[in-house]
Length: 167
Image 1 (cartoon, rainbow, N blue to C red):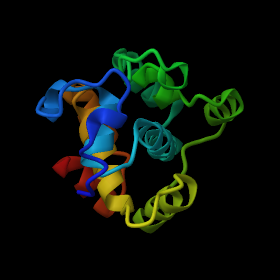
Image 2 (cartoon, helix red, strand yellow):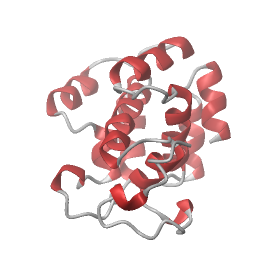
Image 3 (cartoon, helix red, strand yellow):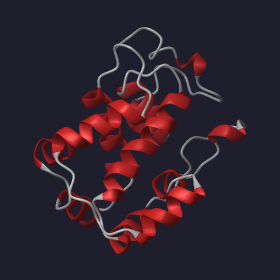
């Protein structure tokens, strides 16, 4: 992990660094486990991972996932980070949110999934797509029922499915 990602002083309204990751907020989990610089990176990357996941699911499945993601992404006074995890899942861009409800599910190969994260998430140098995907997967699985986790598993391809299961 790079030294700046363990520096939780960059986290608005942060808990002490000694706090276990399991007890922290969604975005803080993504930031720490994904070895990211700050919560803004965690938010942006989570949105791209979520968008890619949603693209492979029928709207009804995506809606069931959103219904279970009711917690706030992080407790903060920073308006740029005040999203519920469900808002990040649905996509904060209203045009993308609307269009994603109209299109049929896509078949995305593992290489394409990784490519999209690398290209669309704006990863900093040295940040690996696999690490941030696993961080998002781990954080979101902590928010979902086993039924929803199993349902999502059925839509993920090959090595991405393995990453999901191991997260």
